[in-house]
Structure formats: C-alpha cells, structure tokens
Amino acid sequence: MKLLSSILLAVLVLQSSPTRAAADKPNIILIMSDDVGIGDIHCCGGPFKTPNIDALAKGGTRFEYCYATPLCGPSRCETLTGRYPFRTGLNSNNSADAVSPAREVMIPTVMKKAGYATASAGKWGQICLGPREWGFDEHIVFKGSGKYWSSQVKTYNVNGEDKPLREGQYLPDLLHDFAVDFITRHKEGPFFLYYPMSHIHGPILRTPGSQPGADKDRLYADNIEYMDMLVGRLMAELDRLKLRENTVVIFSGDNGTARFGAGTATVEGRKVIGQKATMLEGGSRVPLIVNWPGVTPAGQVNHDLIDFSDFFATFAQLGGAALPEGVTLDSHSFAPQVKGEKGTPREWAYVELGGKSYARDARYKLTNAGGLFDLKNAPWDEIPVPSDSKDEQALAARARLQTVLNEHVAKDGDAKKARKGKGKGKGKRKKQEAAAAATAASAAQ
Image 1: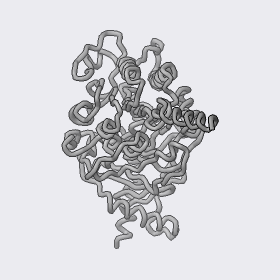
Image 2: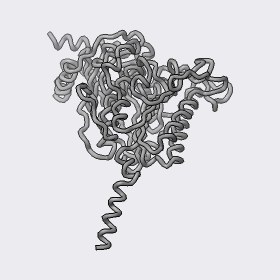
Image 3: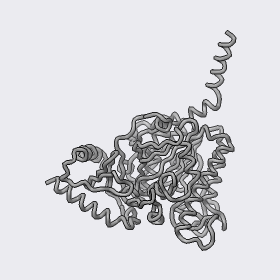
Image 4: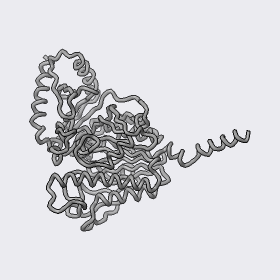
C-alpha cells in the first residue's frame, strides 16, 4: 500500500508540474523570413550555408510542400487570419486597408484567450494599423521592407514609441534583442512570438560581417548566412533559458525567392521555375521546418500539402486555444503531423494573388485561367497538359481541382506591383498561360 501510494503521489506531482503544464501549452515561435524560397536554404537543396536552420530540420521535421501567397502582404495576412485573400480582400500589396480588426480575427487574439503572452518582432507595414491594434501585447516594427541601416530608415517603433536607429546599429540585431527580451520576461510561459525578420528582402546590403568590396552574389550569401546566424543565436537563448523542450519553433519564408537571388538560389544545382510575385512554383513554394524537441520526429521529411492559412488552426490546436466563432476559416491544422501523427492531410492547396489563383494536389495544378499543369518535374518545371489529353489521371485531377476553384473564386485586384520581378520566367509563363487559355477555350467549344 505504501508503494502504491508513493506511485500515485509521484504521478500527481508529475501531472501538476510546470514541465507538464508547459507541454500542454508549449511556447510557439514563428520565424517568418522575408523573400526566402526553397533555394535559399541548404537543407531544402539550396547552395548556401545555413547550418543553424539545417540543425532545426535535423532535429525536427521539414515539410516539403508548403505554399504561400507569392507576395508579402497577402501572404502574412493569410498566415495571421487563417483566411484566403478572396475572403479578407487583402489580395495584393496595394490592398492593405482592405482588412480591419472589426472584420477579422488574428491569431494573437485567439492565443491570448488561451493564456499566451504575444509579441510581433519585425516587418508589418503591408497590413494596416499596427500589431497592437491586431491583438499583440508587444511589438517592434519598422517602416517598409528590407531595412537594415540608418541610411535606409531613421526610426523604428517599440510598443508605440519611436526610437532612433543610430549610425552603426544593425536593425536585425535590434529585432533579435527585442525577441530575446520578450521570451526572457515570459520564460514561465506560455508565449507566442511572431518574428517576421528583415532578412533577406532587398536591397541586398552589407551585413556587419561582410568584407569590403564584396560583390552582389557574395552580399546575397552574406545576408542568408547572417539570417541563419540570428536563428542560431535565438536557439542558443532558448537553451540558456532552458526553454527548448517546451518551445515549438517554426521557420518559413513569406514567399519565394526575389529577383536578387533567383539566379543563384537553385535547388540541387538547378534553377527553380519562377520567383517572388509569380504564380509559378518558385513564387509560392517556401521552406517550412518545425522543431519541438522530444515531440516532433527528428530528421523526417513530410510530404503533406500545407498552405499558409494552416498556421492559424495549427497554433490554436497546439496551444489549446478555441477557434473564433462566426468566422469562416480556411485553415487546416497540421498539429498532428507536428507531433509525428498521420492527421488528416490536405487533398489540395490554394494560392491566390491579384485576381489570379490556382489549386494543386500532389501531382497537378489548375489555374483559374483554365490551364492544367503536371508538376512531376517541379520545382524546376511545370508541364502544360493539353486540353485534348486522354490521360485519365489528368482528367480526374482537372475535375477535382475545378471544384476547388469554383468554391474559391479569386477577386480582381490591383496586381501591378505583383507583376514586378517576374524576370526571365515571365516569357515562359506568358506562353504557358496563352497555351492554357487556348486549350480551355477549345475545351469549352
């Protein structure tokens, strides 16, 4: 009886311990890098040195097929609201004012109701108002994109107070310091940190570690390596605070690689088709790595489809937070996969920008212009499927994906900015879209 009593007491102590409570409500950090596609990260097949991000993948799970809106504003809005652009109205970088806290609920509001302290550390300007108006407890923000030095931006804002960016200060370091201060003050948890980094959005400038006279390709690599170093420094702080086992760390990019790196950010030595702001694979497919020591399977590559609306429901489920009532969410939780379980994977992913859209499954992609593409050679190529094709697999895919597009109708938007940066892929896409339109017209006759 004494032995049994001791065992029961030990179980009760374990269940009520801070470690058990932290496991039930883990800290969550979303690192959202800027203009970082799959070719920018070494463990995704890129040529650059990213040892710290690679270590996250080695100790966690890398999701091979993650799809973002191919431009920063709509992409981040989709992440934070769990809703596609046609629902929120923010479908280009020109539509920041389409959303309002009176009409949309962002993830910090949901997490706060579950007891989380929340903070945003970094880029915000492509969504109206500021992080605090959208529910974050604390924030550090700067104006615009890709800001690093005082020659670009004179001030940054911390919790509503403007502060000068002094000569020689590197803004990404200040974002890091803010993040570390936040997690240190909230180390008893739980906390949710949204960390939208400045790296590696252009202009591609020197980093504190760059050598004088470095050429543009070297500076691009310097920026990737500095971003990776900041990720490593943040992980070291979590280790120092003994928070790693209680913290889910997610690393991703907001859209594909921009024109600055589109020629060098290859995958397995081959150029990716498309880049930021295109509706090609290189515009939307981004790195996604999830690391939760002792919970997320180590060293695995998951092939389930994920899109950026899915972060919302995933974070809510991991944190035991209730989803908002009366809101149509597109978000599909992959929390089970984070824990190494099968879950209920998506059958398709949806991408929309400025009136254009596509849905894709594990093999095929259908655009709202009517073009069907075989993705068996992606991310290096997208093969148009002729409208008169008799391939039963392709015909079935067209029917399935058309149903998705019929239920998700992209709204027209000002896509002028979205068209910038198509570069060398522009001509190829025009030919593909023309072929798709022709085959669709033929099929309709």
